[in-house]
Amino acid sequence: MEIIDIIKALGDENRLRILNILYNSEFLCVCDIEEVLKLTQSNTSRHLNKLKMLNFINSEKKAQWVYYSINREILKRYSFIEEILKNLKEEVFINDVENLKIYLKNKTSC
Image (tube, rainbow, N blue to C red):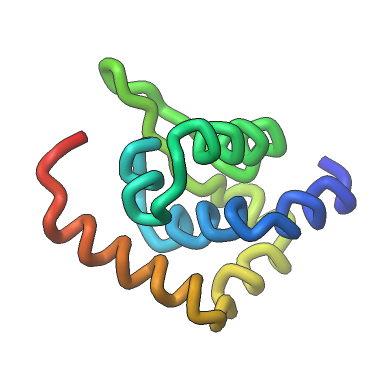
């Protein structure tokens, strides 16, 4: 992965929002991400595909659901990515993490 590809990926607000909530959780499926971020399924899937292609995230299929997690090896290799995720102080990112906590507390199933 080239640094330019990393910067381009991080330059998109929705991809950064997805990485932010994955950084603050274990595994999330597409429907979880859609609900927390209030994004459409097609938009969410498009961004997840881009992040997966760049190895930012891992995926694991369980039955008909695909669960996503942040690729911790990428965070080790490119420590500045984790620094960015740790220091997201803008309101939208803080709200996303709060919405994630509420969602996970109340979640029944997909």
